[in-house]
Length: 509
Image (cartoon, rainbow, N blue to C red):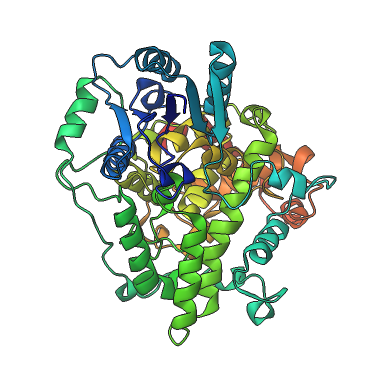
């Protein structure tokens, strides 16, 4: 067998991959911590720490399983801090004859590795990561010939294909979707439980990152790092979710609450996106747990979670590979304003933004409604450049990898793709935020006012958004009612004038 180098990227920590079934002395596994990956955007310190810890744990696992592993740390003097430069050096030093890698999930890395293989001339093979339920091209083929992509159609196909919550060809209970039951505000904080932690001392790792001069954002507790960074910890987190959080997940999955950043969310996205755990094993475990505990968990809780994992997650990945690299340049609404500085500090008088951003900086986490209907909603209403919005989301969240971040941000959140991902812009006034959270009750701004002192910025920016984009949005059948409401509204000039004042003074909001 030729002497083989196998590359494992930081988000390819799948211990069940077929690569690892056999062992031989001619195969060397390579993992590396490099500035190329820490510096392409400014990342949250917890994100870098989590990736490095998870990678190191995985390398140790492989060694214990009897595999040969070369792990290059960030501070290794021989580390050239670039994927290709390190590959070239290792291939020469180790007399490598065959190079193998798993398909990257990011377009930039996929291109970098395919270009390297062509330019270097080395014999090479690329393999599937054996993680997702679909191949890269599946979604594009599924919707081939159709004018628009509809997630619900794709989701139902996934349910059928993998027999999840199914009764033959029909959905269990006769319903595919329980979204209407998943929109409740949390009114009983006593339902909440402390989130499980896997406290670790990461002081030395933080010191190395800082000594190497890596610029980061956010906060971290050096002696109490809480995120799961191994398969074992990820499985424990899944067990905790099923036992304690699943009974209320669906009902409150859209709720926001100042007293708890996690509510009933699983916090498994980092484990999923690094492939320490697979989507199929998660949904099968959740389904099995529900079937055994139907006396205290109804199907709406389970379906809401499964829809996120095998519906939205797989759908977003399919959009990514169907539309990249052009997708990264889309700006349908031609938004160009600068991202306000309070996105990096959390210092704003808007209570909803203060909490959503502050939580993001402190925990490297916010759930989907905080991202979509608070921070993303504000950025869309204010006309922020989607490039800057992308960079913020990609950097601040522990689970953000471009394939899942950009489709959610540029598509679902900012409508910069003109409707590829979502059929309408997801915007709201203070009314929705108040309906789903306790943010408005202690805010300096008045949720009920559109104009005047302390009028909530969301209320006027909401109507300003529709007004300035009327030529592009008025014919959208899903939002035609909003334009009819706007046409009949009194005081339109005052609303627009108030919004213009806010837009001219975003940093002061």
